[in-house]
Image (tube, rainbow, N blue to C red; front, side, top):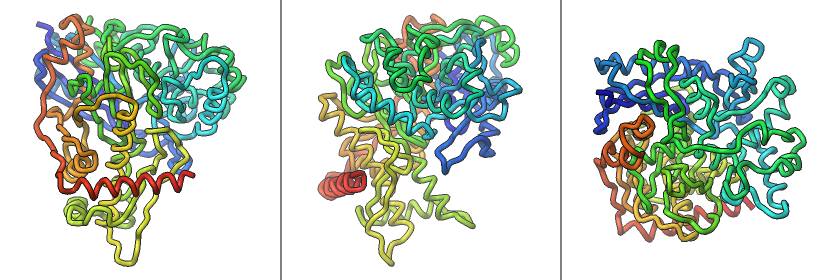
Length: 519
């Protein structure tokens, strides 16, 4: 019986493969880091440049699928479908055959010919220009379903930056494609089929204005964008629909049988929300290097300000998907660890234990070390620390950084509520949700909402497998697959009522500091 599904989760640093049964049992997993990325190739953190070579994706994916199959001692004939999630917006210039330019010898070492990772901020000037034109455009504001602000982390900003920055890539590029759409097309040997998720949340696609922004608007933003609307796509597709079947070449390379269905691709946080069993009113926080906060609602009759988009069917077909998030979360803690570890190692366990003993608010911090994604995107703002004196210790600063990331989460929660979007509970997935009780407890205290920790350690891969189960026809739809395959919860962090007044005051100080520095 073909009752096993593969979830491929392409993260920032590595790809994960999970083999999952139709009942949601995780049979085996495997993880492979991207070798070029690990060595820091093609990146310049000081300039905000983060690029990934397509070979990293292909090689790591192949290794993890084969390893997972070997670890499972599974008859590959049981595999019925593959689902894929990736970071986003992570687009790449491709040639007329849909091949990323970096896979050609003449562009193999050119960062502009590679995938522009979600956290790449080289397109700030381009985002500013798009926003300037959009907010003065007669008739329609193309940013209205993107929270009112277009980000340098998103598709059109990055496309325009590459066109401006690199004449050779501009001449060779026949199109640009998101990672989640390219990898599924490659596996199925099919034309790229644009996913509703990435198109709606990152490329200003919306049915009300006929798809992507109009060519006249794009030309006004920059003449280099003339004609690009027609080069790309008009229609989009939800991730529960099959792109095709695994090609014979890829089946042999991965050690799988022919005929394995390939589901549509989508962005990791949205797929992780499905893996977490998302329902209307239940926010899912995907907590990793950054955060993504995902909600679904039956109907939203207005444009929600300052978020990362609201798109029909981007998370679950038939429901509006809403996304917000923080540009840095785990990255904030990783930065501090590197900062302290200059010239030596850091005992992070001890640091966390000592930070737990620090009084809340001893030091005040802003978490905008990689700009601010939500609410109200602004890539130019920076992190900050205040209240330092000669008695300040590393645990005090670490505690302040945790509190700042929790306050950033609260700002998002309050914006949704201000906009009339119900948030009745929060489920958390990701490495930090499972590995850091201190962070999760402080988040619960600051948010003043219980946080349920999803049992599955691979919620994104699980969600991808759910879409594979629907795309293969094993289940009639992804809602059924989600109900049958979800893992449930294994911990709950309750807010401590006695701390609420102090954290309310801390949150007000956080907002005041942010407003003062931004202004």
